[in-house]
Length: 98
Image (cartoon, rainbow, N blue to C red; front, side, top):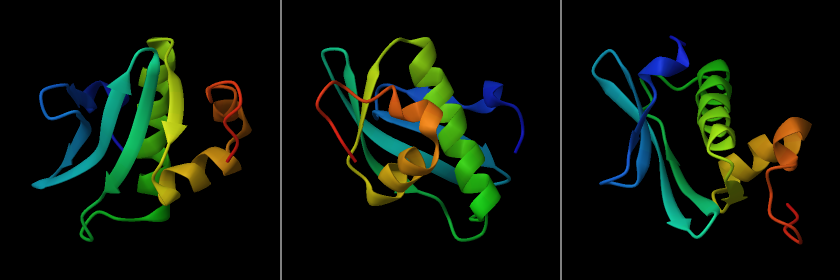
């Protein structure tokens, strides 16, 4: 994946976007107080791979971490990513377990 500088937080559409060739990978979210709810992961089949998915989600989590927000993953794919990456579990709000 290219560097995280190409990751865009489109706050109008409430989604993180990453463009690869002519394909757009995105994670939709809802922001409430100091929590961001990651609701949907959409990655086109043409660019979908285990490595791309992990790198894309890691870039999103790094950007969220820089903004000091708590993360509530409501998408099954994103929850699975958090479970397998211990360093992002600390970003969960108090009392939230996945």
